[in-house]
Image 1 (tube, helix red, strand yellow):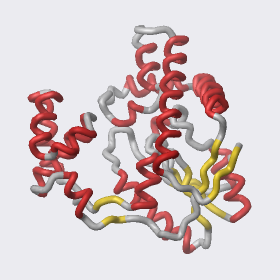
Image 2 (cartoon, one colour; image 1 turned 90 degrees about the horizontal axis):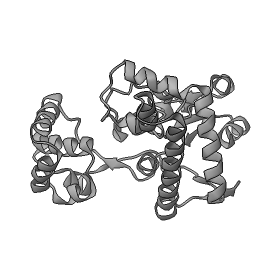
Image 3 (tube, rainbow, N blue to C red; image 1 turned 30 degrees about the vertical axis):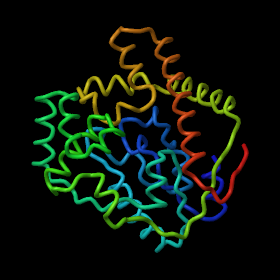
Image 4 (tube, rainbow, N blue to C red; image 1 turned 135 degrees about the vertical axis):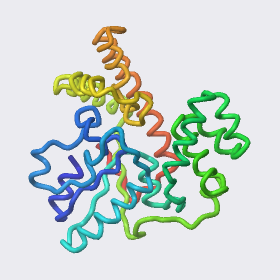
Length: 271
């Protein structure tokens, strides 16, 4: 609501900086803007990809850059809203210019992963890049690290450390909204109840019907995994809601910790 109010006052537009709000199949559970809000203020980069499509922070930065060029012609002020710490930090600090990885290397890494399993694959990647493996156990990140090395002969940690960085304009103003933690928890729980009312269960049912790979990043969207278990009759709907709310509280705690250590706002607003 602050972003909308601000956009109206300064003749601005809103750009998504949340990795889950990228996916068009997760409009409810990722809390994407409603159509009514879009009528009055232009919104960019919401629901622009399918959950099955690869999408990286580098691609997001590129799309943000394109959007900034468009809105500068219209003389609008862009407002990045989110969300995902990696996206926000990348917009401010930039990211390494790792080349786009050819599909043949990516597929080769995937085949190896599927052949040997995650534990053995981690050992293989550890020989290439021990620093990266210590910090990352996610399947997709491990496969990416392996494929980057296959194509370039340089491990991903060295790319991050030594390559020049792509980032957005340094002309920005950072605003952080702060609220008592218990109040945030309360609001998140009310919001999840609202998701259920709006049709979150049906949203996840469509994911099942389309038979998407459940290891895809979009399945990490809060609530998805537990609603899946409910639809598979493994748990009750009440338990799915309670477990989703628990995961949301844990996510909030991690996000607050990240903001405290990684974000240096120009303005803090208590709400």
